[in-house]
Image 1 (cartoon, rainbow, N blue to C red):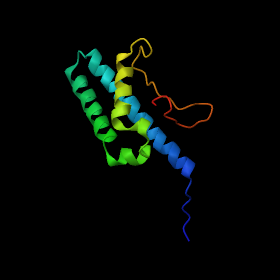
Image 2 (tube, rainbow, N blue to C red; image 1 turned 30 degrees about the vertical axis):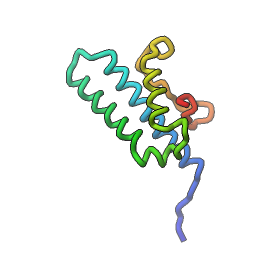
Image 3 (cartoon, one colour; image 1 turned 180 degrees about the vertical axis):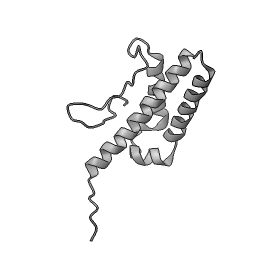
Length: 113
C-alpha cells in the first residue's frame, strides 16, 4: 500500500504557480529588453531568460500544465503578455505583475486571461 497522497487541488495550484512564474519571467525579461540595458552581459542574460520562457510556453509540459485551455494557448498568452510589456501606463515598473492572491494563498492566472 502506498503512502502517496493525491490532491488534485494542490496539483492545480502548483501548475498555476509554475505558469505564473513563467509569465512573470517573460514580462520582466521582455520589459528589460524593451528598455535596453547599459550592461551587455545583463541584456544577454535577460534574452536567455526570455528564450527559455518561449521554449516553455511552446512545450508539451506547458500544454499539460495549462490543460490546453484556449485562453492559455501560447499564441493567446504571449500576445497578452506582449501587450502588457508595451503598456507602461498600467504596468509602469518591471515588478512582477502576477502575484499569488494573498487572501486565498493560492496562485491563479486569471489576470493573464
